[in-house]
Length: 603
Image (cartoon, rainbow, N blue to C red; front, top):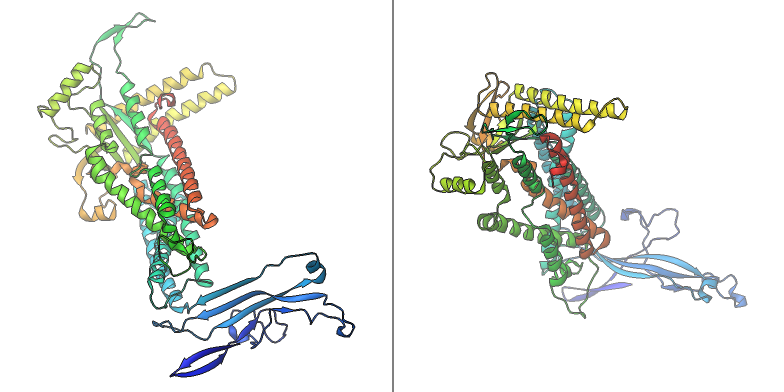
C-alpha cells in the first residue's frame, strides 16, 4: 500500500509501513513499544482461506481461515508542529483464525477498524513531572506546617504517634488538592485547545499519558476520602460545654417529697434548646446539595454539555442525530463535569453569602444571637489548648422569664438603653478564637474525667449485679460534674480565678494569614477577636471547599466507572447524604457526652 503525496507540484508515492502484530519471527517483537524492534512489511491481506489447506491437489477445503481481526491506522503528528504536519502513517494489524467447523455452524467473529492519532508526549511528560513535583513538595511542606500548628495547639512539644498520624492526614489533604488542581488543569487544557484548534497541533491523550492522568485522578479521590474521614472524626470529638449564666432569683418553694423549703432551681430548658440548635447547624452547608446535583445533571445531560465530551474535534453543545459522534473521552467528561460543578457551586456560594445570609437567614449568626437571648455561652475546644468561644451572657442578667418581660428586654436592646453584648464592656464582640492555659485544660479533664469514670464504674457494677439503680447514680454524678464545670467556666470568663486568667486582643496580620498563634498561652489564656464565625471550623459550614471538592471527585469517579452523569448524580447524592447522617449522628453523641446533656433531649 502506498500513500500519494504532492511535493512542489510533483506527485510522489510513499510506501506505507505495515506492522503485523502477531508475525512469527524470532528476531523481532512487533508488539514492543519501541519501533526499533519491529519487522515491517508492505503487504497485507484481509482473509486467507488457502494457507490452511493440507493438500490442495485433492481439492480439500481449508481447516482454518485466517482473517484480520484488528486493523489500526496510526497517524503521528510531527514534533512541535503548529501547522498540522504529520509523519507517514502506518498500519497495525492483528490476525486471528476461525475453524471451518465454527464457520459452518455460523459462528460470528469480532473485527475492528480504527484510526489512532498520536503525538510526542515528551513535552507533556516534562511539564507533568515539574507540576507534580513542585506542587507536591509545597503541599508536603504545608502539611508539615499544619502538623506543627496542630501539635502546638494540642500541647505536644515533641513528635509523637498522634502527630505522625495527623501529619499523614494533612499530607493526604494537601496532595489531594494538588492532584485535583493538576488533573483538572490538564483535562481543561486538552478540552479547550483540542476542541478549538483550526489546525491540528494537539491530539487526545493516549497510552502512558492517559494512564498517568487516570492515576492522578484516582489518587486525588482516594486522598480526599482520607481527608474527609479525618475532618469528620475531628469534628465529632471536639470538647464542647454550654455555660449557663442564669442565677436563681432567691425564690423559695417547698419540696413535695421532703417538705423542706429550698430555692427554685434554674431551668435547664434553655440549655437543651441551645444544644438542639447547635445540633441542627452541625451539618449546615453554604450550598444546597440537592439543587447542586440537579443543576449539574441538568446542564450536562439536558442542555447538552455532555455532547462536548466526545473524542472528535466538534465542540457543538447541540448535535443532530445525523452528525458523527465519536466515543466519549474520560478526560473531556472530567474536565466538563468539574467546570459545571465548580461554576454552579461558586454561584450558589455567592448567592448564599451575599444575598441569602444578608436578607433571608444566617443560621450561624442567628445561633450567636440565640445564645445571647438564652443567657448561654458556648465553650469549644477543638484542640487541647485551642478552641472557640461564643459569649452569650445576657446584657439583662437573665433570660428565664415570661413572654412579656422577654419582649421588654428585646425592646431595650433595640433602643440601645442597655449595655453591649460583647465580652468586654462597651463592645459587641461575642465570638473569639482562644488559646487556652495549661491549668484550664487540666481542670477540665479532672472534672469531666471523674464524671466519666464514676459513670463507667456504676455501669460496671450494674453489669456484675452489685449495684442498685444505675440511672440515679449516673444522673447524680453528671449533675455534680455539670455544676462544677459551669461554675468553673463562669469564673474563668469573669476573670475571677487567681491562677487561671486571660487577656483579649487582636491577632496580628501575620498570625491571621498563617492561621496560628505566636504568643505563649501556657500560663495566661488569650482570647483573639475573630470575624464573627470562626467557630464554624468545627462545623460543615466552615469546610465547604473540602466538601465541594470531595463531591466533585466522587461525581467524576462514578462517571468514570459508568460513563453516565445521571447515575453519577444519584450515587453522589446518596453518599453525601450518608456522610451527613454519619456526621450528624457522631456529632449528636459527642454533644451529649461532652455537654452532659441527656441525648434523649436532642431532637
